[in-house]
Amino acid sequence: MGLPQSGIFALGTSAHSIVELQLRNPEESGSGLAAIARFALELNTTNGVNLVVGIRPSLFMSHTAIPVMAEDFSTRIEGPDGFSMPATQADLWLWFAAASQDRAFDCTRKALSLLREAAKTVRATTGWTYQGNRDLTGFIDGTENPPAAQASEVALIDEPARLAGSSIALVQRWRHDLDAFSSLSTAEQEKVFGRTKPDSVEFDEAQMSADAHVARTSLKVGNEALPIYRRSVPYGDAADNGLVFIAFTHDQARVALMLASMSGETDGVRDALTRFSTPESGAYYFVPSFDLLEELAAGY
Image (cartoon, rainbow, N blue to C red; front, side, top):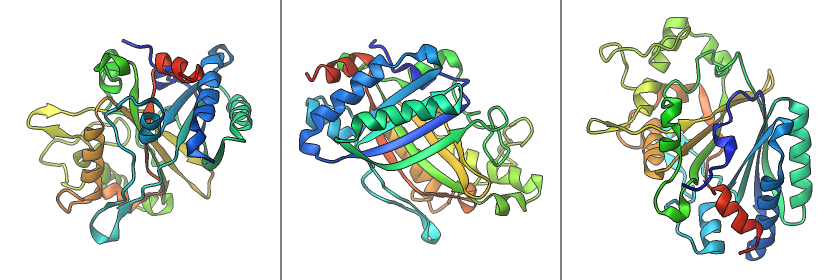
């Protein structure tokens, strides 16, 4: 298998910088892709910084002529009650995860300076760890993730060999209404999620509401579970905050199915958590293996 970008699995970092960029001239995308690929390959992780680079699927395919079995997030997802998930697809996604905020900040500035002539920033978000591994709602995040030994099987493409070690990422920014959520009792909050707040014990089927977050996001086809690998990041300040939802998969279809389920597009039942958290962005990115980054850096 090709070598995956190490930041996908680099747990334990407390400071994050997440940037999405649009190329100024897509017809001359090669120089921008080569520049960021070289930067990613040269970044020394011993200074406590990991970088994951994602590329709009259609852009990667147009530049390399390599089919990646993924599509852009080009269409808004509509649900009941006027709810929708916006499509805000950009060309590049950079996710810096660092031991400290100053390191994430410095590396982000260096990358943006490198790309200044080729691309413009359309979205930049500063993230941080909250209470170890909890979302700002107070609930433990990522409890549906596969065991560590199986994470690569869920997150990474293995066939065809040309794409081995690569991944497909969903990136969404969700803005929380913490005042509204905090007004609920703990029991009411747990009903929204479908699991307990202190220790994340999932409700049994008799207790689980059809619109509970767990019910809408734990997907199966028949008896087969469809796991994804979550690496979400809380963001913001006391006045404006939420979650950058980041999910890696080898199969885009299962992520698309999850979004359709959350939005109520499939059956009209909307995820209860969407009453308290609003999606502000949505994009898919192809995350090339280090092998493919080396090819991009060399300009093919």
